[in-house]
Image (tube, rainbow, N blue to C red; front, side):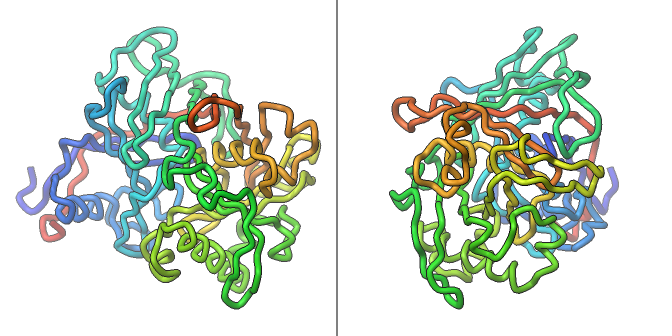
Length: 384
């Protein structure tokens, strides 16, 4: 052990189209301030390159999963998620990441926290941020989570073993209601813009949906095109922050931007159309999707589509009157599988309404995951 540094056991794990740093609960101090210092030291933040830590200086790779024994009856493990800002000191526990969630089951199996049962091990995950239960069906081989398979997800090279995740229990988990305002559509007054039509839906994470034409967009723009337009990104945050205050997730718009940048997500929706995917050069055809979406979180555009955004979009598609439902053809409204076109391709959501209680029998999607590295991360003691 180096006398000027303290070591922490970590795993870097890809989950879906995101990558996160996984720590066991007992590796971290219980005191919140001390814990935050350790996390920032491991990640190397705040620093726009995160050069002195493990994280990847991108909203899709500056993510944390803390895994511990379950504190909820009927679950196998506890999972706490944090989105770690790379340019401020913010560590945001305000929501969950559906892509990182895909790696929780494999991590728990590989660490011996859940007995491996071939060919499929079902892991019941207590998602601490939302106090909900996620159900992951993880393929297993030789006592470990299976990695190799024929499942391809857009935004990740190659293929992997298919993990199915069901988020049905997350409907209404953040605000207490699937429709936090009680309405499928609201017209909100946004400073500098006037009245804006939105749908606010809570499933997986809270999403604010806006139609592309409201922002003067086609809906097929690339992430780079949207982020390069400062006037547009300011409008997006004005709408998102106003909605955040409206549903009680922040007291002021300033608080929404500075303290609740992760959630709610903001999603631009439009009808199916052809569009080009620059990262691999293929074209998504209109007939391959039911809706086109572009999503923003942490004041940046998502380069693919989040898992929690997927289930929320699926839930919104099953609620008559929402802006998502409005974009769909009659056939798409009746079909349980929603095909979402995103900047890197397509993601499917198996969404079925009509259950008792929170109203959904299934909100599921498929992902792949892979352990990339395990070892000791050293943090300078003067950071602690």
